[in-house]
Amino acid sequence: MSPSISWLVIVGITEKGVASLDAEARAAISDAALVVGGKRHLELAKELIRGEVLPWPSPPHDAFPKILAMRPESVCVLSTGDPFHYGMGAVLARQVPVEEMRVFPAVSAFSLAAARLGWVLQHTVMIGVNGRPLERLIPYLQPGARLIVLSADEHTPQAVATLLTKRGFGAAHMSIMEHLDSQRERIRTMEVASFALTDIARLNCLAIEIPAEAKAPSVPLASGLEDDWFEHDGQLTKREIRAVTLSALAPRRGELLWDIGLGAGSVAIEWLLAHPDNWAIGIEKDGERAARAARNAAALGVPNLRIIEGEAPAALIGLEAPDAIFIGGGATAEGMIETAWNALKPDGRMVINAISLETEALLLAARKRYGGRLIRIGIERAEPVGSMTGWRPAMTVTQWSATK
Image (cartoon, rainbow, N blue to C red; front, side, top):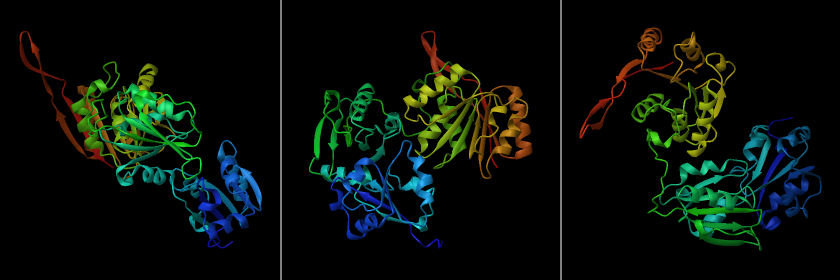
């Protein structure tokens, strides 16, 4: 088959049903040998469907073998609004070359919500919690922020209201927007702290407006969070050292970090906070610390931190190659530095912090073998000395950083 034949058609549809489609999109549905979609989508388009019907199974990827087996016969997949904005488009594009697809996007729920409220989309956070943890909202809860949130179901608004209230944002306003772009459209707005609705449609999205004068603690946008943001047992890369460490790791969009000797998870968490597309794997041999790091990640809005309970370097075998590696503990384990360096991608960054002379000696050897730079970081904090105040030095940290 020529790759220019577009056998897979993805049609975005709104609650208006076929009235939201142009003639070409309608013809694509009618001409398809197989039409795939949610039950709601299939009902909206039923007057146009002539071929076989396949409702999405659970999980949806179970339908992919049948879809792919139809090639080169025409298959039409129905999606809500814009298929490439929290829709099935991105998932299908991993299965089928884009040259073999035709896509008819409709107006998205984000656009509809913004139009109803008069919000400017480029200054609005657009996020989905359908199939994703609610904690992902936490980093975006900033003074004056506006968020449009795709709900998972009718229970999402209450769960979001509870989350915001617990974090001190009860004064925020939330609009529950149901069945947008249909005769059943309904929008109700209230202060989050007074949320008490029970008659919410399954199909809904939320618009959240945080007051500019909000005093609730927002997650800072810079690296080097205060230490008390993290639950810890003392095994924590302290604030000032952490800021220097993140600078050396130099996170970029979509990159993977290995945090070896995860401890409280502070470095991995700040790596994830640097960009929503970043990901991180933490390796921690102590089960209690691993659980604590998971709690910290959820509390700071990055529940996607993947934690492996095990001892490095053995626990590193088979993991995805990282773009950056931080070793905050366990650098003296036999073969640790060499194993980690060999796993690092070309142009990847590796950072190791040491407070002991034994680890420092290993860093001197690493610099001689792999290059990079060594710095020493000394921090002194003003603390009470009797009835007066004096400088109390923290343990000096030696840091080796190198690019492969």
